[in-house]
Length: 280
Image 1 (cartoon, one colour):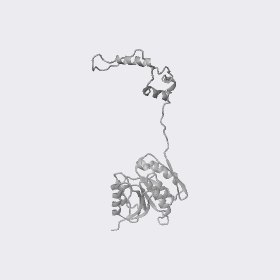
Image 2 (cartoon, helix red, strand yellow):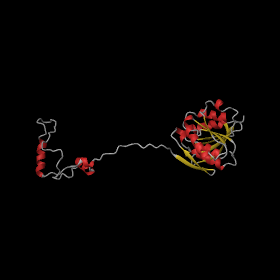
Image 3 (tube, one colour):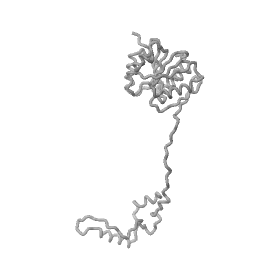
Image 4 (cartoon, one colour):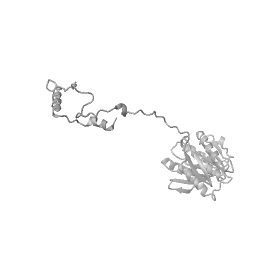
């Protein structure tokens, strides 16, 4: 239906000739009750047609609904079979990370990017070649991939639901580029640590990026860090601080380890810390 036709019916008052106006008033008087104060009732006008005649011209009010209303095509939702991809460059290689919808571990977080940049720019101080490296909360695997490309023997860990995408990214980006084939392993913070990671399993570096956020496993995370960080292990933790609970964890972290700030990236609100086992 034409938009102009729709608007004209309810809001435009027709201008009637004097004779018709007088006749309209007489018919209106007949709708008043005989008793004084009686309620006014509508009396149907037998001469009133369904379509009013306005000034003798019907073109502006008579609309052809069948011609103006068009049949809509049935809507079908579009389903995408692939997820987003992020592209990075490290040590001369392009790294393509496929993200997923598997929760927090399915996307790349700011601290992971900052930590990758830091590791590549500070290879003289933190030489990962042939070093044993464990990453906790690996997520998409970006940090583990960079560590692997830089020569480390890497074990990437995360929850069981994240391992599928993690393994895919590790394989895709390290094949033919690394000295040691990386491993993806299940790690639930605070659970089965003695069975899955014996004390004889000593790592040179433990890496963690954005593992502290709004979740309820902070105590288990700190316990896991302390268990895995042996006397000769350096724990490098990068994080963007968002909540008060993040700062509370940082306070407990500083109390549990000998720590120092390695780098700050104000544009990302990320800080990188180095921690070693506390000397009593």
